[in-house]
Every structure is written in C-alpha cells, then in structure tokens.
Length: 200
Image (cartoon, rainbow, N blue to C red; front, side, top):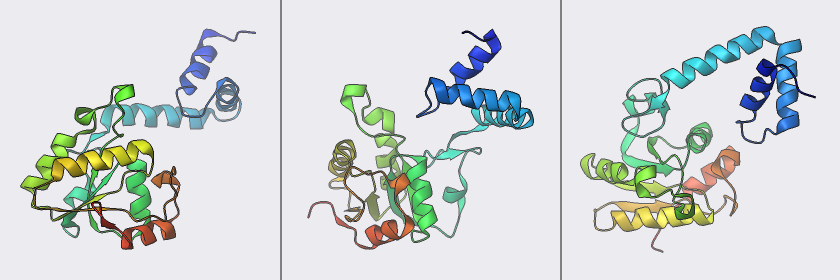
C-alpha cells in the first residue's frame, strides 16, 4: 500500500541514515507525523542549518561551523603532537577519554582503492604540509585497526619518512577489527599510553 507522495518521500529520505531500512524508516516517519511534529520541525531546521553551515576545519578537516575549529584554536593544546584519525567520531571518542591534549588531523575515511578512495580524497598532502610547516614532532597514527586502517597508517608513515618526525601507532588494547568510536575511554587511555613507533 502506497502512502501520499509526501509520506513516501519522508520515508525514503530517512533511509539515507546508516542502518535504517524500510521498516525502521516507516516507524520513524509515522512517529514524527503522529506524535512528534514539533520534534520533526526542530529536526528539519537543525538538518537544514547543519547542511548549510557545517564545513571542514581549514587546519584539521574536522567538522566545524567556523573556518578553524575550537580544538585547533585552543592555545592550551600541544601543537607539536598530531593525532591522525579516520573520522570525527574517532576524534570525539579520544576527546572523551580526556587523556590527549594535542592536535588532530581527520582523514574523513581511509584508503580504499576498490572504492576509489585514494590519498587525495583523504587529504594526505594537506597532512604532510601541516606536519612540515607547523613543526610537528610526533604523529600518532590512530587509524582503526582494520585492514584498510592499517594500510592507511603504513602509507602515511611512508610519506612521512625522512621528515624528522616521530611516528607512533596506538598500542593494542583496541580490538582488531573494531572502530575507535565504539571503544570505551579506559581502553583508549591505555592504548594511548602504550603507543610505540610504527617501525618496531
């Protein structure tokens, strides 16, 4: 049974979210229309504002509504240490652990030639330029411990070879195949304290 075109469009639009199939999208749409109209209006406004106003930070590529994000502008951060992560959710997980006070570079993905994602798409050149021009002394490669994450870490390490910078990798403690966004703060803190050079 088909609903009105507006309802069908709402359901289809909700399916763009990760893990949301047809039935879940229908439940969400019906909830908003039956009991959550004020919440739906607020959600629509927030989505519109975010789509129009959120950009990438000029320095670290993290999401920001200003040219430079709050972390990069914070004078209390140690800019000599740069943590490279795959996504904003990974950055958030590390920040919530409360143990790291350096800078970040958010790749917004990992190398995946099969999907057409190469070094240009994740900003490797921008990362190298930042390391060279900002006097970074240590780069922590905190890509996820997946096949793609490991390949990305090794590629970046190869590109930084000879640049007079210490390259470290998060210690194990983060489960292989897991993602930083789902790891608890204690495990992240332990992994940071046990990091070691990638070449070992």
